[in-house]
Image 1 (tube, helix red, strand yellow):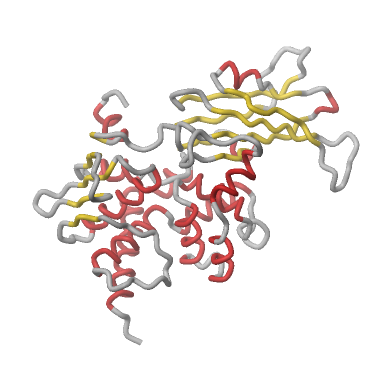
Image 2 (cartoon, one colour):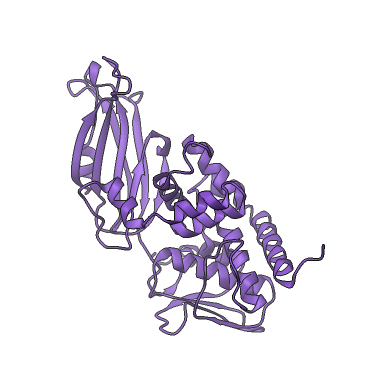
Length: 339
């Protein structure tokens, strides 16, 4: 059966995104690093000019050859900036003509295109594959110990997956479908859930600083991870604690690092109830202003001296939010300029 022009355009774009992953060595770097694909860094590595400006009539621009450059608006959140940049990168990689993109849609693979230009259909397909490849889903699912049948049908889990992949909840759901990880019906159910409900579930009585910010749920599976998000995000940390032997997590380390501790409690599993079993220490905190830097907590006995073999939990924060203008942070780092 012959492919339709739309199908052919999508397949060509997806193949181009996969090829670029290989050329840039992204799979190894990303899975051993932050766990998300830094599209701004990729554009910098390809020596494609990229600037951020307060565009009001477009999300992004791709300048035509021979100029070839990318402009992305500063008036949207980080997830939109990332997808827009990947969309504009597609125009360059696929040798498209120049483009002014007013609307960029994180569509599902079976969604109607509504008569859109094939160039734009291809750019969306490239962006989705470049930012959310199957191997990145697999990496996070394995790292967290999630299973498809038990965990990925849970909206709370998919929300946390989206944060780790640096994508919107909607785009993450569509990726689960396009990679055939979940069925159409399962994804339809996930998409019915409101993001505000997911944030409230994790944050309990506490809300992030604004409606665009997120609430991260971190466990011991996230030890050593890098959190890339927004300055007003909230952090929820859940760690097993050997309370029976008097061990406690050093929550004071968070306060010393500038975190505002909003909630701090311990609970025991009651299904089943096991006496002497470890409790779970749950801390909800607002990160310090600036949102960068590392923090480490150790589980110690308060009357004892901390030792190197004590259990520890560390996170590295990069909660700088959207690019604010001019060169990207990746390009400024490359040039040795102030980030």
